[in-house]
Amino acid sequence: QSALTQPPSASGSPGQSVTISCTGTSSDVGGYNYVSWYQQHPGKAPKLIISEVNKRPSGVPDRFSGSKSGNTASLTVSGLQAEDEADYYCNSYAGRDNLIFGGGTKLTVL
Amino acid sequence: EVQLVESGGGLVQPGGSLRLSCAASGFTVSDINMNWVRQAPGKGLEWVSVIYSGGDTHYADSVKGRFIISRDKAKNTLYLQMNSLRPEDTAVYYCSRKFYGMDVWGQGTTVTVSS
Image 1 (cartoon, one colour):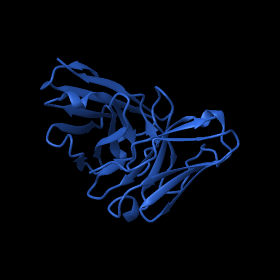
Image 2: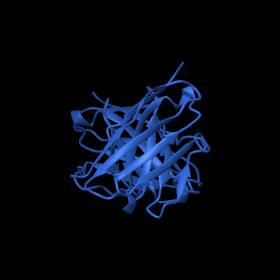
Image 3: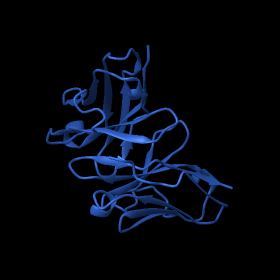
Image 4: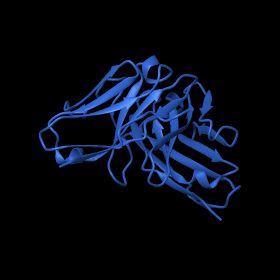
């Protein structure tokens, strides 16, 4: 099964908003509301920032939001801050007890 | 404090075996779905395996038949037995909690498969 498609890079200036897309198929992203997003800083473990398309775990700033339309999920980071610079990965349930990740997007804060 | 700590990584020759451990604190591993996720050097995340709270296990196609996930309730520890290792299994291996939205991750343990 192929990885979900994410843009390799994204960027924005402090205070701006950036949206990262995650495209799959009707067998994964489009078929289930089990899309999650993870933030990973260099040398660190991933951190859950969005679960089940748009649910934000406790402690995650409300600057992070998630959505889905058809086979594409999106992560929006509003009011960009320097500490948001990291790699971001989407993840979806793909049926038959399998999970699939996106290839990752490197977010640069200019 | 809820925490996961992996161990057991190292250098192994192709065809060899290794067992990774993931010690949990602050919760019971047998009460919740637990995963292994790996990340090859400079690459993205790849889901490897899950063990459900009920005991069912599932694997990515890339490791099916070679890796075995298990847990020890008394030791509150998750394991990954890796057999017939290949160079492409070289990665940092993370254990994580929950299936839909992995909310707790360990710091990772590095596995290198090379002759």
